[in-house]
Structure formats: structure tokens, C-alpha cells
Length: 169
Image 1 (cartoon, rainbow, N blue to C red):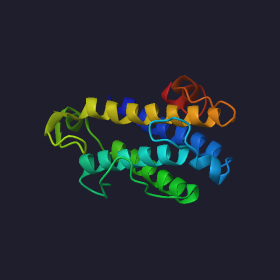
Image 2 (image 1 turned 180 degrees about the horizontal axis):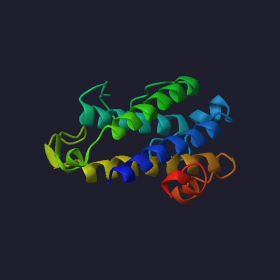
Image 3 (image 1 turned 45 degrees about the vertical axis):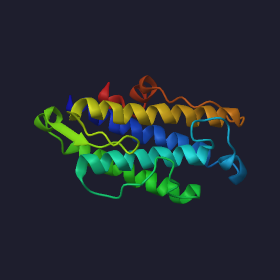
């Protein structure tokens, strides 16, 4: 099970690099243009993914800052956002690398930002949600890029496994 989550941490970093490289080709106006994604623009969507990752990592590690809202704009320019994304991806990988099977089976208790109800569940399925959430919103980022006329990006896990993630295949 640990290798499964290590693979997803590597995949997450790889996919984020591809999305950010494509985003770097956009004009500032295109980055900020709402194209119907849940958080509107590509810049807002990429901020949300980082916000959610920080919220979850605070829950997991009890370290780091927790934004007050899921639509917080942490960085208003792509360069600073990309640097923060890279740092967070490395933080995620380092934390996952330090997990044990016992920790995956342990429970996590937290309170969602959007609903003040205490939740208690095992860490492993919560990590599944953590990585699935990133993939979900990267899909919205991808749709925004294609709506802006940019080429489609191959972000499939299978493609990752056939290329940079071959050690997991």
C-alpha cells in the first residue's frame, strides 16, 4: 500500500509539472480568464489545488499554514505559484516516504473547512481522496487550457507509468 501512495506522489509531481509548463505558455490575461471551471480561471484553479493540498498536509502533519478558504489566492502570479507548487510536491513526497503501514491504518480526525462536523476515518482512504482531488482539479485545469486553444496534454497515470514513472510499473 505504501508503494501505491508513493507512486501517486510521484505522479502528482509529474502531472503538475506538465500543467504548469503549459500554463507558462499563456498570457497573463489568459491565465485569469474564466472558462467555466469550478474556480473560474486557470490561475484560480491552480491556486485551489495548492490550497487544498496545504489544508490536507496540515491535517496530516500538523505543520504548515492552513488557508481560511478553499478559494484563497495564495499567489497572484504564475511564477510564484509554480515555485510554491514545486515545494509542496516535494513536501508531499517526503511525507509519504516517511509513512508506515501502521500509520496508514491509523485514524485521522479533522474538521472540514466547509462543514464544522468532526470527521474520523483511516488515513489510507483519506490519502486516496487527497490524490483523487488533485487529479479532479488538474482535469479542470486541462479543460481550461484546451478551451484556451492549447494542445491537449497526456496526463494519464498509464502514460506516466510508461515514461517517467516506469519504476512503478
